[in-house]
Every structure is written in C-alpha cells, then in structure tokens.
Image 1 (cartoon, one colour):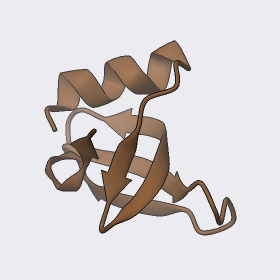
Image 2 (image 1 turned 90 degrees about the vertical axis):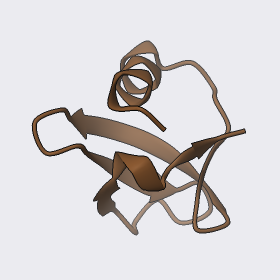
Image 3 (image 1 turned 180 degrees about the vertical axis):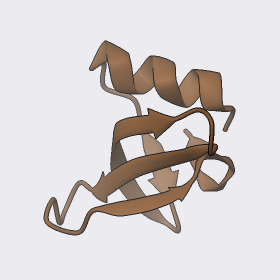
Image 4 (image 1 turned 135 degrees about the vertical axis):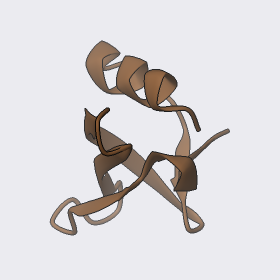
Length: 59
C-alpha cells in the first residue's frame, strides 16, 4: 500500500478492508516521514503495532 492511501483511509474513518499478515486491521495513524502506520487487529484492539505501510494490503 502507498503511504498517501493509508493516510487517506486513516483520516477518513471509512471502513476499508486492510490486511496485515493475514489479519484484518484498523489504521490508527500514518507517519509519512517514516513510511509507517500504527495499526491494531480488529479482533484484538489491545495489540497495537507500528508497521511499514508497504506491508499493508487493501482488499
């Protein structure tokens, strides 16, 4: 996924199906300078992760 698209999804609050390592995730924040996103799996909102935006896939 591109950083600009990840940021668009995070800021819109719209429902988009985003996958990370086989899990559906929610994008909380995008750091454009570092190319990372703060995410959490939809089934475990306590498990916050910071991952490269390039590792996210929009379905």
